[in-house]
Image (cartoon, rainbow, N blue to C red):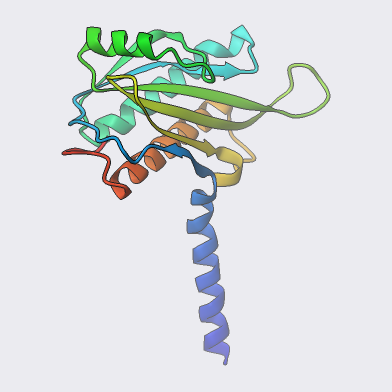
Length: 192
């Protein structure tokens, strides 16, 4: 009986610690009718940062780019090209995406958003928790997938800085996107 209780305790601890990281990611939208060509180049825009405070733009852009380029480098997925402008996350200009993808010979475009959670009563009091979301479009301007990662739900990061939270959220969001693309067989030859 004692061994059974120990086994149940160890199993539940393992499930909670491993499974908690998956609680933060979510799938917002998936277009199953589109096949992605072999991805050699990814274009991404600067993330839309919420709340709109200019002092946090540069560190957020840097952390997002660092995490995204590291993720794609680890997957050997080709090159990443940064477009140094933010695009509205809710109103996507598909003609502009087509033009950017055509000019950069890219197969897909990533439109990200980073939302910082506000805590406290002050105007500029922030938590280190972020919600990183992204939409993926193909070179023809077709909406493929939207995923997000919440660092509070995923890793329950209570300590640490916001830059690391942006990196963790970006990697979590890209892992979820890659997982869903492979699971639904949206890629024709290679994973993102």
